Length: 168
View 1 (cartoon, rainbow, N blue to C red):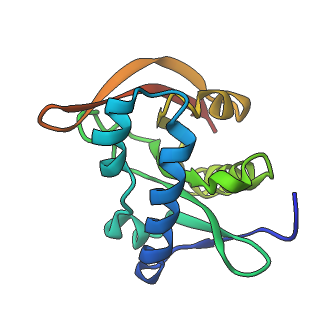
View 2: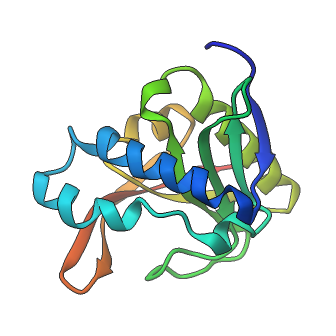
């Protein structure tokens, strides 16, 4: 790892920088694990920052020593669309690490912060809809696979993912 990493709560003002991070990193990170058709249809839909998520108070940015956002992600009490909300189970949301900075501890630092903040509010576990690419990372962070799922992003546009869960 190079330099100092800081985790902070996002604000709506972070939208352009996180949008750019998602837009450049998701296509590069997912390329090896998804067919070109998915990269063309689904990834552009996934690669957009959600303004409401950035303002929710449980979505975070990881910044480097130059205050550049090199990672982002968070959790919410609400379940993803199509999944039932359960008490004391939060949902990991829209995690990304700059594809040029993987294996520097950015994602691990971010998830440690997510785990801590979720635990402080009474969450007992976290669900995650992981990309195929991120399954080894989430497994290394203590998540277990609950099996494959298909996420319908829009009519005719599906995205293959893996549902995972971690106790806090």
